[in-house]
Image (cartoon, rainbow, N blue to C red; front, side, top):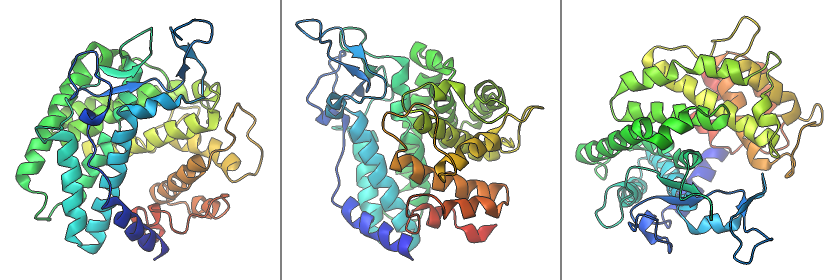
Length: 355
């Protein structure tokens, strides 16, 4: 009940949100087309040694607030509002929730005046260096949760079969870009969380676009990726060397969990896939859990400390693990996290009573 009460409160606020659109940004993308998504690389700052600040210089883990003037924040806010409204509609049947969620989806993806072109050629631009790069794809991963939200809107008069068909077409065109563009191909080669989230995004988009054979192909590569990223003790060296090491480690485990969930749709059991020396999804979670519940201090870089958002994410991952592995010990860990999870949305989406 606390989780439902919070959800309804947040849905009330979401009714006031938006609409959001790529065309609302003040900057014009290099193409000259405001319908093109554009973002700035978060950890790049004006160069203090040049009069014009160019080329920008890298400061890992320190976010440049300039990026909020582009499309990375609006797409996140759109997804957040849509996901909130769709779940609230699904649980309560309140049609105004579905009506506004539908309005927000159409504004971002479908309406003639405000739609986003289905590509991310200008994602994570770096001033003085590049107009866009492969790393920008991860900033569009919010389309995964929008697809889930659409499923929750089924049955509403405000979201029709025709609306879904049009959105599926958008996702199919975006999928073609993800798989065939040079930027997409480059992102697929990334060895850290960027590569993981690329494969998850491709797979989720493919399933929504009713092209499951592509999802099966990309998800089939996950065991090899996990084996390369995770050590036998569950640590992820490529994430641990970052200045927000716990954040990126947890973020990558989230991608593993999402990949495993998608794998169920194409007959793959990624949950229990592991190498002979134990590298797998569960081992990666088990490495992080003792630090999250503060059994011992995190010994790796963390310029922002143990971030509250990451601890909240750990609660979700622990609940999902409790269900998938039928292991109540993970639930008991949630109670030891230094965050209040009683009203967390995961209590509605992943209720502990189902295992």
